[in-house]
Image (cartoon, rainbow, N blue to C red; front, side):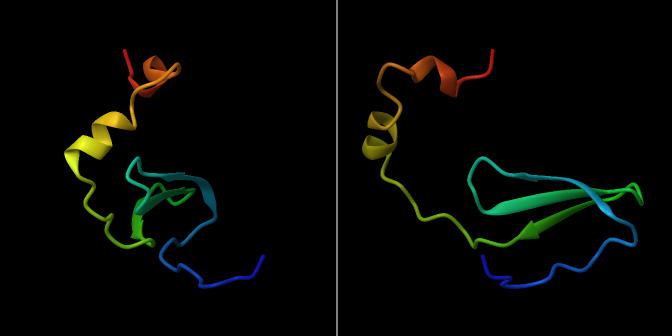
Length: 67
């Protein structure tokens, strides 16, 4: 593992980080009661609708949806 960059923005320690479903944005929550959204992976490439639809078929199709 190699450190690639340092994200500065919070005035207190970071408590939680999560990645967006599209995989491009990371959000961090800190003890200073702020949320920061970081665009660290660029914009996603456009996926043709036929390819996107076929990727959601299979045994575990129900796990991709929130009820």
